[in-house]
Image (cartoon, rainbow, N blue to C red; front, top):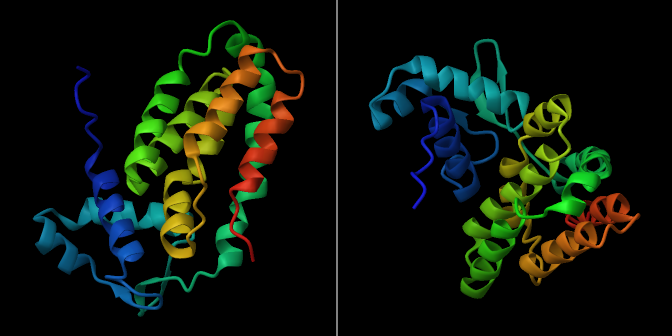
Length: 207
């Protein structure tokens, strides 16, 4: 059995704050107080500030002088904006990755298997986790570190979670859609990059 993934402290704090926003603990416009989080999690304020900076870069929160940090008032249109950008990046990644994945798709297959199990249990958290992991492996297979870094900087997991939890943008079967992509790579479909792009755009919230 593989050892559990240990995330950095700022990332753990970021996930804690994101979950608080998604669950409604912090509502749009509400202030997030660093000291309160520090007491709750028994950590210093330094990693909390780092986590908040990352979330501000993702446009999930906003800060203003003398007003502190607050949750942004996000609309469906805000959530939708990331998808065309992500689709373009993943189309490029699929094109670059096609020769490698045409020979061996084993890096994608475990995530599809996990998605079948998540679909069976209707486990939304696992569906998000393995969907993001699938697409991360696809982008990584491109062999382009700049592309991977740019993709990672979009905060895909955060926005996917928000789209599902806030807007209910759920697919009938996460596994089947991703298995179709794997099969396209396996069959060396010349349109696989377009299929990936259309798949990502199809996941966007409807506004």
